[in-house]
Amino acid sequence: MFFQKELRRQPEFWEGVRDQSHVSMGIAAWGLMTGVAMVESGLSVLEAVLMTLIVFAGSAQLAAVPMLVGGAPLWVIVAAAFCVNLRFVVFSAHLRPYMMHLPLWQRLVSGYVMVDLTYVFFTRRFPVPGTTSQERLSQQAYMMGNCAINYLAWMGASLVGIALSNAIPTAWGLGFAGILALVGVLSSMANSGLRMVSVGVAGTAAVAAWALPLKLNIVVAIASAVAVCLVIEAVRAPRDPSGAQRV
Amino acid sequence: MFDIDLRTGITIVALGVLSVLTRSLFFISSRPWTLPRWAQRGLNYAPIAALAAVVVPEIVMAQGAFINTWQDARLFAVAAGLAWFAWQRGVLGTIVAGMAVYLPLRLGLGW
Image 1: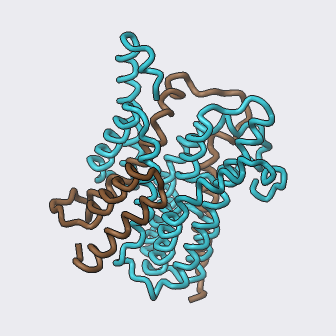
Image 2 (image 1 turned 120 degrees about the vertical axis):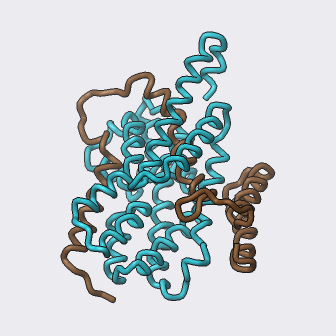
């Protein structure tokens, strides 16, 4: 956890802080607009603050608020948020081998603070789970430095957005800075042919399946991109074994 | 302004619990278990696919439909951001370059 001194002593903690701070402006702009949007959609200031501090999931919040204000039953709102959060279930399957040496409460807290960009940064920096205790400590330190900056940027900006919700119209579109941050990170990951294929397939599928309810188009897009890449890998493997390993 | 009703409060707590559970679903049980090989290989492509699935519709769609005009500030902003990234490889610069194109087009020309 980022409150553990032991982790802050690792150089990887500060590496995580540095990496995440490059995108924190985009995260902050996105958080700001989420704060504005929650109040504009009809939550009271106190409700919006509690939702920010407790839920800590931008897309799920934006999906839940109109339903909440419109009087939808609790189970419908939770089911919708679960679907919006389904990508995190995929992330948790991926991260399991990095986490299982920790006690349960630390695994749960690490999961809670692990969101899209921190997952992407972490798996880019550490493609293979650590085997020695020093490696595990370094990985934990990087993860927590990264998550701490993301958490602070998101929370701080969301609370400012709630406070200024009357002064900043959503029409300015400041939230687009968050999309640009994701575009930058995406570009930095597109380092192999198959990963570019993954971007193409996922992007196309997400647009084509847009009409699905509850942001399920994102899950469809991930599944189809992974499936297409695995098939291409399998077809290429016999002829070009080295190429298949280059991911 | 500081009012809160019980239903909203319960929903907020339920959504908070849901955030923890979905993000740690595969960390909860400590029984030995590993992903099948094909799924491990597939995860090489999952992070970038998740990003693309979130980003691409936000750039090329409006009101639930594919945009049918090139006069959209987002297209030029992303082009500027990508150009910056190709040149300097920095994410912060990508955001700044993109917004420098986006805001004048959106606020000035209404694109």
